[in-house]
Structures are given as C-alpha cells and as structure tokens.
Length: 128
Image 1: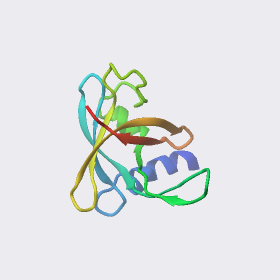
Image 2: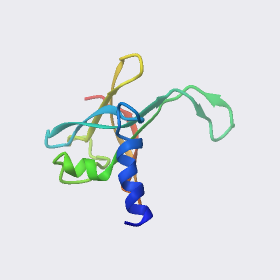
Image 3: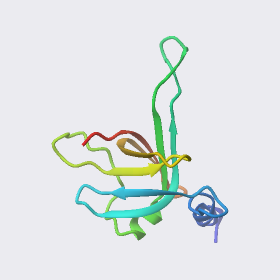
Image 4: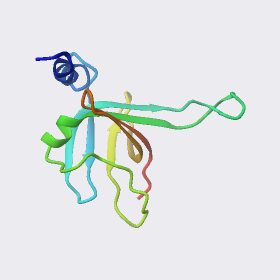
C-alpha cells in the first residue's frame, strides 16, 4: 500500500473519528431528499479580512470537510456541488456549533482534493 492510500485511510481517523479525532456530526441532504448523517469537520467563523482595505470585519466563513469515500458509502450518487439555479433544491449541510446551536448551509464552492479523497466545501447560510 502506498502513502496516498495510507493517508486516505488515516483520514477516516483524523477527519471522521468523533471520539479520538476531529469528527463532528454533519447531516447531509441531497437535492432528491436523501438524508444521511456523516462525520467530518464543520467550521463556522465570523471573521473576515476585507480584501480592499485589509481591515478585519465581521463576516461569515463556513466550511465543511468530508471524505469522498464516506459520501459514496452513505449512498449518495454524486459529489455535492453548488446549485446556482435558485428554483432547484440545493445540497444542504446541517451541523451544530460547540454550544449546540444548529446551522443550516448550502454550498457556494466545492474544492475536492482527489489525491487524498477529501472535499472542502465553502458554504453559506441556507434560506429555504
């Protein structure tokens, strides 16, 4: 087994292990309504740098990281992607912050790392 394969297997521990790793429950719903609970990382930070001025400002940065293998193992038939057509249902991620406050988000941008099987999703608040 080469290092990439080992790294992908290690991702199951570092990204998804909710006892000894960084795993956090993330509920994923596809546009067809398939709903599954996965473990990954969900970040919700209210701090940005204004690119024009370099000034710190309050703003929402939400990211979700999931393992590609786990998405398919859960029964999803595709990698989650942004849905630019607002008349169609998007992929939805839902997760709690450390204080138990739930957030519901949809995808702005999908950034897969195909070499290790990790996908980073840039998200925004979902308003149904």
